[in-house]
Amino acid sequence: MTKRIRIPGLLDLVKVDEPDLILQLNGNPAIDRNVTPSGPLLNRTLPALVKRNLDFAGTLSPVIRAREDAGRIALSAALYRRFADPALYETEQWARCVAVLGRWLSTREEEAVAGVALQQLIGGILVPGYRADRAGWDAAVAFDREVRALTPLARLRQKLTGSLERARATLTDRANGDVAAVHGTGIAIHNFVASLRQLRELKARGERIAAEDAARQCRKAPKTVMRQVREAIELAPFGRLAPGTLVLFALDDAQAANGDVRIAFLDGTWSGCPATQFSVRLLEATWNAAL
Image (cartoon, rainbow, N blue to C red; front, side, top):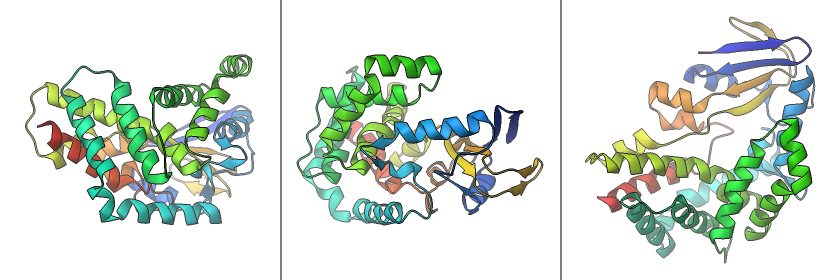
C-alpha cells in the first residue's frame, strides 16, 4: 500500500508498492537519483550517506547516478548489449557456474560456494582475468551489511574499525576499479543469492515444476530503491510533494503483487537492470541442472 510518512523537520517520505504507480513515478522526470540535498534533515542526510557509501575512488556506482548522466546512459547500453549476447550463454564459464549452482541446490554446502561461483561468472563477464575467491565473497557480504547500516552508531563503528573501507577496497581491487563489476559482484549479487536460496527450498520440498515457473517464483528483487523529488509534483492522494521528498519503490512487494519480474527490476525503463534476462536465464539453467 502506498503511504506517506511525514515528521516535520525530520522526514518526508512516500513508499510505493503499486506496480503501475511505480512505473509512472519512475518515468516522471521530476523524480530522480543523486538530487541536490534539500528538505527535512533525513531527506538530506540519507541520500548523502548512500552516495558516500557507493562512491568508489571518486566514481559513483551506476545505480545512484541521475537519469541524464551521460556516463550512466553509455554504461547501461553497453551492459545491455553484453548480457544480450547469445555467445555468453555458450561459454565454458557459464556452464561451469551453472554446474556448481545446480549441485549446490541439492547439498547443504555453505552459501559461500554459490557466492564465489556467481562472483566468478559475473566478474569474468565484466573484467578480463577476474578471479573470485572466498576473501572476495566475504568482502561482498561485509560490504552489503555495512552499506545497510545507516545509524550514527554504525557509522562510528565503521570509522573506528574500517570495516566498510576494507570491504569496498577488496571488491574494487578484484574488479580492477570497474564500478559495474563492483556492483555486480558486491551488491546485486545478494539478490541473486537470495533467489538461489528460494530455489534450494523449492528443491528440498521435492517440487517438480518447469524452470520458467521456478525462476518466476524465486526471483528476488531489491526490497526498495530510493528516488528523490527534484521538482514539486502532485501525487494523489497526498497532494504536493516538495523538492527533496524521498520516494521509495518497494520493488519486491510490487513483484509479489503481479508476479512480473520486469517490475522488480524496472526492465525497459531508464533505470532498468541490464542483467534482468541474464538473471532469469541463470536461474532457469540452475534449476534444470539440479533436476
